[in-house]
Length: 153
Image 1: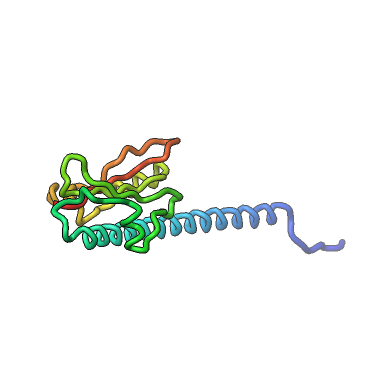
Image 2: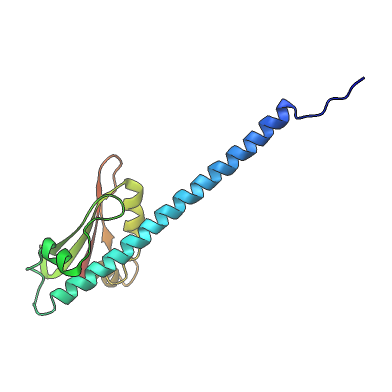
């Protein structure tokens, strides 16, 4: 009787199942890394925007002269965010000594992540005694969401 060597079908299916699980895990980790990198970039961008607005408006008593085109041109910063939306800066309609940075074009999950982040220099974060994130926004499925962060006095 001759003995054959080689792989059985069951062994091949087992190997393919293990490879599939490893691939799925790697994909999830890469996706998580990309999302964290985008969030870090948004944080850096917002810090730059806030510093730029404060620097440009230092000679004024309030932020009522804010103009998005002038702000972004003067800072040499793009108003595009890594999520495919834009950043916008506007004066707070209820207090001209405050300005609002809007992060537009977010999915529900991205909106929720940025809304929960502690925006340490924002009005909401400081006034809540560091208990709230300082960001606001309605995060809804199927729409382009906006996160708003208020800065100033």
